[in-house]
Amino acid sequence: MSTVVDAWWHALGSGRFFTWWSALVSFIIMGLLVVPDYGGTTLLSYADAAIVSVLGWVLLAIPFLGVAGLERRLHSHGARAAIVLAALVAVSAARPLVNQSLSMWLFDETTIGAWPVRFATNLGIALVGFSFVAVATTQYYEDRQTTQWLAIALARMDATRHRAALYEAGARRAIEHTVGGLRAQRDVLLRGELTFEAVRAYAELVRAASHQLGDMATTSLATEPSTQPVVAASIAPAHKPLLERLSPTPVFCVGLIYVVMCAPFGFAAGGTVLVLAMFAVMLPLDALVGVILRASMRRITGATGGLIFIGVWTLAGMAAVVAGDVLIPGLGILGLVPSLALPAAAIIISATIDAHRSASRAEARATATLARNALALAERARTVRSPLEAAIGVLHGGVQGRCVIFAARVDEPGATPADIARFRTETDAAFDEIIGLRPVPAPGDLEGLLAVWRDVVDVASHFASEVRPMLDDAVTQHHVCDIVNEGLVNAVKHGGARHVQVGLDTTSDGNLRVRVTSPGVLAHAASVGGRGIAALPGAAHLSQRGANVVLEVVLPTADSVKSATSVGLADPLQSGHFVAR
Image 1 (cartoon, rainbow, N blue to C red):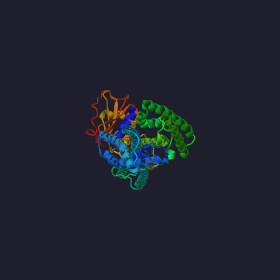
Image 2 (image 1 turned 120 degrees about the horizontal axis):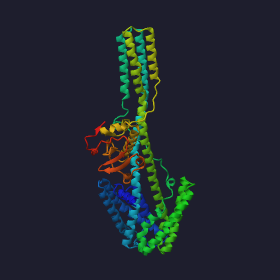
Image 3 (image 1 turned 180 degrees about the vertical axis):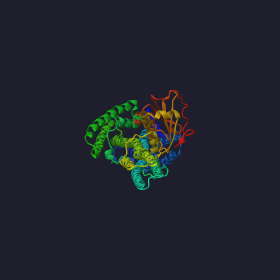
Image 4 (image 1 turned 30 degrees about the horizontal axis):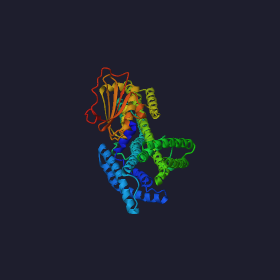
């Protein structure tokens, strides 16, 4: 129950309570279904009532444009909520009076029903109808916004992956060019006059070549996030026609909402007993519809399933009309409202639930893809550098080392043909080894992961000195990478963060503490943590601290520095201890 209230309160002050979707739903309900009552039962009576209701809706909708604009300009959640509630109360109070005036002006007829009952009925319908749509649309738009932030991050990582491929090809060309040049220079050396200085000069060429490869091996694959053009490909699900979006609603959902909207009218007409009777009729009817739809739509999907959905709920609406005539005889045209209102409510509820679910699934896919890609890209960044790093090692040990020995041979007794042949053979073997080097899969490290993420956001990091020995343990570093990666994903999700602080220190008992802090607003239900956070090692907690979203994890480690004491991390956004890397 608290989750429902939290979601409602979040939507109430979100600044998006009144939208074009809520306008459409209110037009259907207030303009076409819940119409003024003249006491007649003919189609002409309904037409007159619908004309009055639609015109009244238009007149009342005009000031709502100003209210919708005002709630978007206000910054206080409480002020937004107050404006929304005041607007709903005002329109519920004004609607009976507006409809009465229009009815007298157009048809010289008065509408039936006392103002307090009509006000309470309108308020109940407005609160339930608007709130349901607002909760669904708010969550939908937040999920879509999050998905777009994730899409931008994925696009940047795709660009980095492309650069990694270019880097790998460039590294291969650089290695081949370097080896070809050194082999040619060696042949020139061996054809000329062999002196100690000539061999030493060649060794310097080898040393310079290895340094050039070393510079290339340390080149970052990232670019500045602010200067990199990004086109975020939509990763939202493909658009589906309305009929394909319809699926069985949660049990009692439609019936409960419908009765709550009609409760003020029912109470005025027959008291508490009638309201309870409405519950007794509508809830079993809702459950029966659910059973029928789940059984039939399990085998039939797509547009045909949507037609079945509408057909079954239309029959349910007709059954509600019959039940209403038994419970409250002589309702007139109002008694026919359930035949349209019930299937309309079911369609609206099902479509909004489907939209929210689709957006949530898209967000979940994007989140998982981003987290997976970041770790894979960090591993690839190390992998593509492995031939360069190995080539440097071979040049130092396999070529420069041979040069030192050969120079000594040349300087002392003089190199024999056998010495020259051995030098050629050994250096050829080293050059062939370098040419044959291929990327070797390497586990990504924390620095590599941060380097990948710096292509997406501006990451500042600080590692306490006592943490460094802990990161030498491969398992600990793997866990830390998972935690930091999840924190960076959340930073993008909960505000499209451009600046993130990553801090590592130890607790008083020597355990490792990881903290990822970024500006943003935590979604109302996110503080409990999603599946990504639940899967993290250690004690994880995602929270809102002022204007920042903070993921903090205490990671038990067998190699903790027991003597270390932690003074804790200051607010990273105000601390001078965090240094941009």
